[in-house]
Length: 207
Image 1 (spheres, one colour):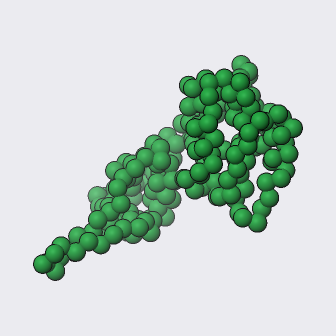
Image 2 (cartoon, one colour):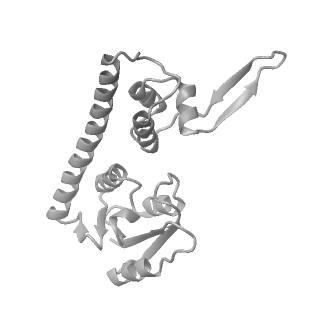
């Protein structure tokens, strides 16, 4: 049963010393650190820390925002740790999921995150219905409005819960329109012996 620390800063010029000092003071026997934006999906050392943890261990962070890319990601990560019999401690917020009070806090936060996601989708769909009621055509559109773009961007960032198909269904546009508006990468592959060019989109994935 060990305390394993994880620290992260967003930029190369920022320093980890404060976080590491606090984690050592707590008694962490091993530390993992990343220097990368919290919005980035791939965090090598966080993945290494999660793989290193064993049943009975506890993951310790200085602040909640050091662990999660979003509230939803934070909740899902902690819940997954609990399924594996691993505790979680955030020093600044004084949260400890090995205690009954800490578990209650995270269940409550999970309910709020789900409520927020449902509200976003409900408001977006209501806005689209209102636009159609004013005479605007529904269905696939060449361009997305800012509200649709914002929703699509949030859903795309939450790859653990939304696929590209989910986003297309929510904002009601074609795949090419979505990729153009979000400036997502795509590859052009010519068909040998023909002038036609087929656009090959990157594979769908969950984040």
